[in-house]
Amino acid sequence: MSRISGFNKNTLTTGPLVRLAARSNALGGPTSGLAPSYLQANLIVLPRRYAHDFRLLCARNPVPCPLLAESAHPGAFDKLKSYIRHDHSSSSHPAAVDIDLRRDAPRYLVYRDGELHAQTQDICAEWQDDDHVGFLIGCSYSFEGALADAGLPPRHVVQDRNVPMYRTDIPLCPSGVFSGGTYVVSMRPYKPEDIEKVREITQRFTTTHGEPIAWGWEAAARLGIQNIASPEWGDAPRQLDGQGEFGEDADEGYIPVFWGCGVTPQEAVMRAELKGTIMGHAPGHMIVLDVQEHQVFGAAT
Amino acid sequence: MSRISGFNKNTLTTGPLVRLAARSNALGGPTSGLAPSYLQANLIVLPRRYAHDFRLLCARNPVPCPLLAESAHPGAFDKLKSYIRHDHSSSSHPAAVDIDLRRDAPRYLVYRDGELHAQTQDICAEWQDDDHVGFLIGCSYSFEGALADAGLPPRHVVQDRNVPMYRTDIPLCPSGVFSGGTYVVSMRPYKPEDIEKVREITQRFTTTHGEPIAWGWEAAARLGIQNIASPEWGDAPRQLDGQGEFGEDADEGYIPVFWGCGVTPQEAVMRAELKGTIMGHAPGHMIVLDVQEHQVFGAAT
View: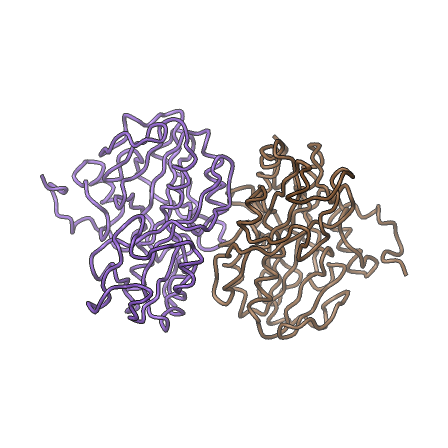
């Protein structure tokens, strides 16, 4: 059975349309490439007793854990409090008006007492109306579009692969039960002469990780990344322009560039060994919002 | 000549009174202990071309660089834009209404092209009306009061010494010209059994560094701190309860607890080797605000 039925994938041009498609189970596949320019978000659902610490974890570590919105109150799956702002502006953009956090991701993962319990198309049965709090975290799809527009498409996009992601030794600022966590980073290879341009292009994406946190082979070692060819998540970086492997000795003139990654808060949650039912979107199966990039990040300069 | 003349230091009970005393040059000494419960702030003044990158540096690293307010526009020394909020609340508290950033710190440091140029009681002559942007950064005086109130006064407070501060290897998330910076931390020794209480007490001070970023002797090594007896700033930690030295082998039952420190953004600015005139308050000679702790952080729980 096709993962999309009843309508063409190309018709999913806005955040609300993608969410409706997921809600009706017409869409069960990844959201990459859908509703271009609309913000896509990672979802983490926690029991309310962990919500305060998690909110502060995000506030203390905004680069890897950019909190976009959360349930307006414990149990709320259809009403969000949004933190999406232009820089330090005092007013916030509504993240998504007609939303159901239990059904609007195309696929979910359900954890019970720290163990993966199920993969589902919705979490209506698991959602506890007096207890669960949903958190939406920014993801890097937006700045990848801006890099491509500037003639600097990430290699994995050109190759239609997933971005490689790595655990690092860089500590997160702890928050209550969430201690001992470290940054997870995504990596995109670039030429040294393009680094300043890449930093400049991605700087304005403040709520979707912003500019890189580190770049170069020395930085990889400093982050504690032992082997660039073996990412913990995503696909291994492979060839560059079809000319060979990517690696420190490959001498292709590309160096690794590292960004904060939205897998970080998921890792922190897993590490905290929380009790009860924790849920999230399945990797790549994001919740797409009403907000468009230009509304949040402005135009390229 | 006394550093305070014309009135008694005990009369400086509010932020506005401390600022007026500094403005009139009646107060030229440190602000520690003045206007209890009023927020005190670090000052950094930069040419406008660096303001955007610095603002983002703070936004990306809020634990060591908590930005409280800044000049309402380039050149503004008497009008601030405030970022002081209750958690994620949308409205902000005015930081200080009747303020003159050029005169309201009791003492200033002036740097030219990266070199210390002068120590002054005001920076009226150096302030450029079309160019300088002042930034106010939170400091840890507030949470020290809360720790003392809970029967856990920091050792350096009891001993009437300065808190020890250390450079670490923990990288800041870079922002434009501000790259290569690392966390500076302050350290207060506590007993292992008090750590969770200390974390809990300081957690709510979200805009003045919040809860510790690390604790224990292993953490000291992980942060890259070679010798706890030799801080880069402040006074060396000395005796604990008069029973001996503080150190890994001293076996006094105290371990080091580390917080993000407001010296971090100053270090990042110095490291960036900026051109032009950079200014700041002299250490300990802070700008005291109109805002009281309970207005920002709420009551102890």
